[in-house]
Length: 112
Picture 1 (tube, rainbow, N blue to C red):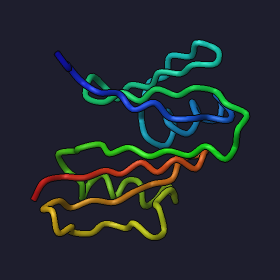
Picture 2 (picture 1 turned 135 degrees about the vertical axis):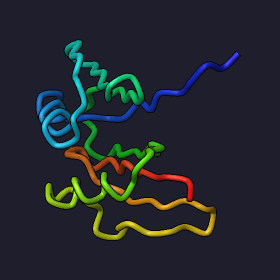
Picture 3 (picture 1 turned 120 degrees about the vertical axis):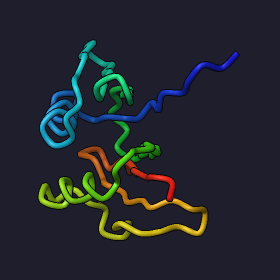
Picture 4 (picture 1 turned 30 degrees about the vertical axis):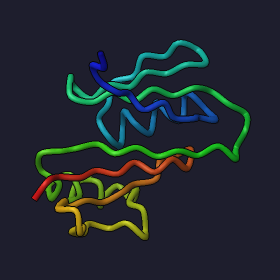
């Protein structure tokens, strides 16, 4: 039986990814050399694998409980995806995206 899913994203620099997610997003890092686990409290977890292939990019979606506040806090950090600002979707969510230091798109959303 499936219990949960954890996105696995590429990183080109483990230390820069740690800096980005810890200092800009508030995650806690667990560095295993070429593998990185990031956790946000006990609510969300992202994993990263080191690669030299800079063409690899990925994305994931994180459900949140107060998208407006999160958007405001990320806005001042200049990490918002320029084409995915806070918006209502036809499928009943309010969401926005950021681009991390590896070019991965992380989307945050809340059900309306």
